[in-house]
Length: 107
Image 1 (tube, one colour):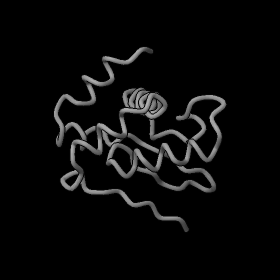
Image 2 (cartoon, rainbow, N blue to C red):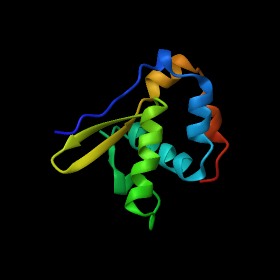
Image 3 (cartoon, rainbow, N blue to C red):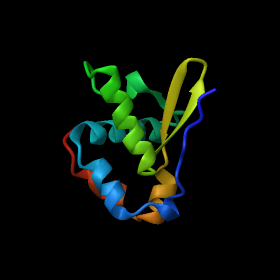
Image 4 (cartoon, helix red, strand yellow):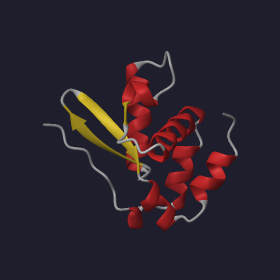
């Protein structure tokens, strides 16, 4: 069974979070994860969270960077990997960051 590493946000520097958010495709993923969370969702599969037409390896890499930066968490459900934005934890560590970043992107 695959296990995912989720760092404590206390150990994640702001630079790591900003690096993860600096790539437009990852920003789009974060936006989709935030929309899912706001709608009461339980998370999105890789294919539902990623941009259409993106290669599977690229999608996996983007989600790995989001997990390593503390922005997302992952869990296995059967053969699917479900990702969820760690919104409350990120807001607690970096208040207002996600609101500011998400408000500044084109939808």
